[in-house]
Length: 388
Image (cartoon, rainbow, N blue to C red; front, side, top):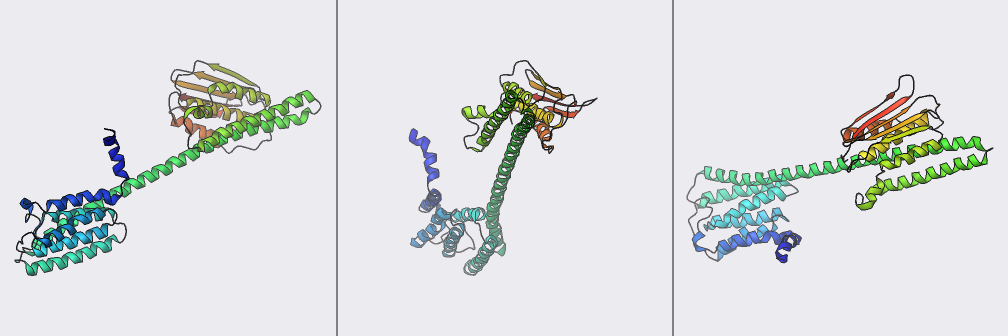
């Protein structure tokens, strides 16, 4: 039983010529059955001839080259055509003449180079065979030869149609793979933007504040410690992000470690507070059992909003509200706009646009706009249980 289950795998490992040989051998064996002799294809009206050694040679040429139909399709069709010509000119009229159709379909499907030249060459060879049969036969009408040519042309065309479908499927898979890689690169770029922008902004703000603390060693030490802690967190987040490029990404505990839990929001808020930003934080509800990518997106929304608050409203009162529902996570981050921008580099606008795309992918809502009377507010409704 185990051997039977392994047979398909063992069969696929064999050389393609070995796998194609049984069909030719089966057709060749059929030629020796008396009941089927002189009941095959008859073209040109050549009188029947008894089965002899020549018939066996013709049958071998018609059948056995089918083992080459995928590896060397042109050679396969050439040998089968020679056998078919001998079969018809000698009047054997073997059933094995049907192997010509197998060879034509395989050539139309598997021939890679000079396909048009091959078609013209075999057409010319068929015309020569038709002329020879017309002269040696009983004078069959020309329409018979035309009809047979249309039949063999249909076989070639069938193979060409199958080839076109196979190439189209390969192209579709290639485009899908390229689109998948492009989407993954875009996602990694967004993650890099979120991680680098937030941590570097916090470090710049903390370092700027440390300049004015030289007269207070205790506070200066705290500020420098905050810069160090922020740098370490940046390194950790970047290491987790770069792990996305590993082949084992998405398995086991590594995947869980790379996904920031919503519980880390408090750490994010504390880091922002140490950078000199007064932040009020409120988290309500219980996270759903399975949130999919919603936790990560919620984390990134808060991270980007706090980064912008540090950049453009440093010292302003900032509020972070996160509410967990059974089917969604709601996030709102707002500033009152009373602070002043820091000297950190300006943003590219990618952060909010990237967040909007992430939330849209999960089927949620995202808004970011100035508040009436000053300040800015970011709101996001993220359906839980979705996956990117």
